[in-house]
Image (cartoon, rainbow, N blue to C red; front, side, top):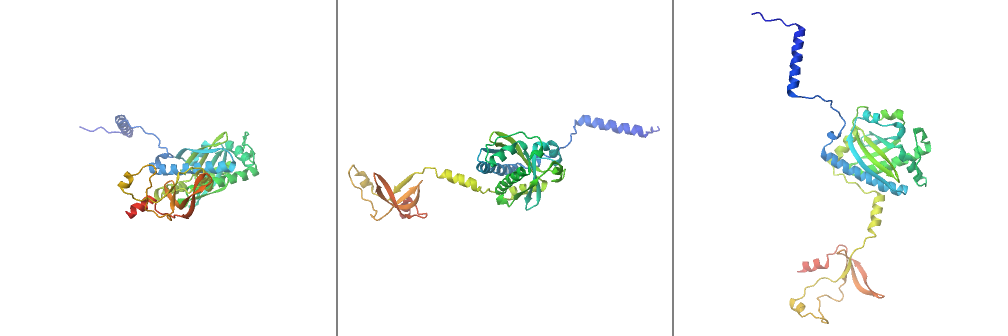
Length: 329
C-alpha cells in the first residue's frame, strides 16, 4: 500500500493540532514576568534593611524636630525593587522636588523624590515662621534661595543616613537638585534600584519621600547587612535627648554598713532597747549604694533636721557589702 504524501500545509496543521492538544491537557497559562519586586531581597536582608531604615527614619524625626523646632514624623511605608523607567513614568515632575545623591565609597548614584507640598512648611519653619503652607503648582516656583535652603535639608538627611550606616562604612552625599530634563540621566532606564518610601509629617502637612538606590548602591547595602551586624551610632541630638531624659529619673539610694555575721543566739536575744555588737570598726566607712550599686564610701551625718551622707571616696567598682562578706566567708 502506498503511503499518502503530505504537503507543507498538512504538516503545519498537524503541528498546530498537537500544540493545542498539549496546552489543553496541561492547563498551562503563560503570563509575563515582571521584574522589580521584593522577591529579589531575602527575608533576612529585608529584616536587616528595614531595621536600619527605621532607625534612620526615627533619627530624622529627632534631628529635624530639634532643627525646625516643630513636630516632624517620618515612617517607613514600603521597601521594594522597581525598574527605574517605571518609577519615572509614575511621578509627576511638577508635584515633586527631585535631587541626586551619591553613595561612597562605591560612587553609586541615588535618586530622591519629595512631595512639593512639604517644601513650604520646612522653609517657613527654618525662616522662623509657624510652618504655614501655600499651594505650589510649578517647579519654577522654587527660587534659587529656596533651592539653597533645600540643599541644607538634603545635607541633613544624608548626614542621618550616613550615621545609620556608619558601622558599614557607607556614606551618602547630596549633589544637586534635578530638573525634569535630567531625571532620566541619573541611572540607566532598566536599572533595578531599591525604593524606600516614607510618609513624612511636618506640623499638619503630610507628604511622601522616596529614596532610590541604584543597583550598585542597593547591592552594597544588602552586602553590608549580610557581612556585618551594622549598629547605628546615636546622633548627637538623640544622645543629648536621652541624657536629659535620664537626668530626670529617680534612683533608690541607701547608706549601708558592710554586712557582718552574727550568731543565732544573739539574734534570739534581741528585743527593744538591746544593743547588738557588730564586728565593724568605728572607723569603717559605710557604702552609698545607688540602685544597689556601691558608688562612694560615706559617713552618716545630720544636715539640719535631716540625715545625710558625707562622701569620702569613690568606690571605683568595689564589691558591694554583701559580696565582700561572702568573699570573706
